[in-house]
Length: 194
Ligand code: FNR
Image (tube, rainbow, N blue to C red; front, side, top):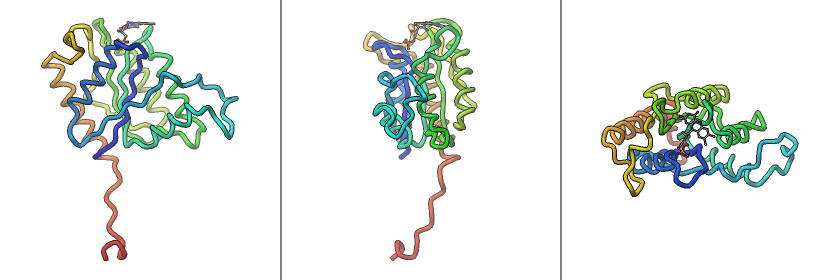
């Protein structure tokens, strides 16, 4: 079982990105366990707070990322960029530099918009940040989800069959991608072999 943390870039309750995260939990292969890592209560990154006792929310956030084998980002686009809350979370996890929680972890990105462009600018801005902090970002399939308002039913369930197939296939690919970087099983030591 692989532990995948997911981060929703929108803080609003009815967010399409949140609905998509629920669909991802439903459609992920059984080998992936998806758990949300919240970003809404993180104080803005400020180097002055990077002391021996940084804000408790930063410590908790960093530990949650450390506990994951990989991270799935599901983000809207704000003004052709990524939302500030998401950028802040990335900054918080990236410091102190030598203890960055991102480096070497596989990542995948889904961007969404009620418009036609599917948050493509946010997707690429996010990919740039993730590669700079050393995440192993799955290059394909790219997921730019447009017309987000037409994809869910009244109960918030992803009801568009084509999109359900795309999400399920993308998560299967993500599982394979994570597997490429997972540590190989170590041979049992003599003591363990009994
Ligand atoms: C937006 N929206 C938006 N949409 C888009 O496709 N490109 C953009 O650059 C922007 N810019 C933008 C800025 C700000 C500040 C807001 C609040 C909104 C619209 C946005 O896609 C829409 O509100 C989505 O519903 C937001 O995603 P969630 O919250 O539904 O996940």
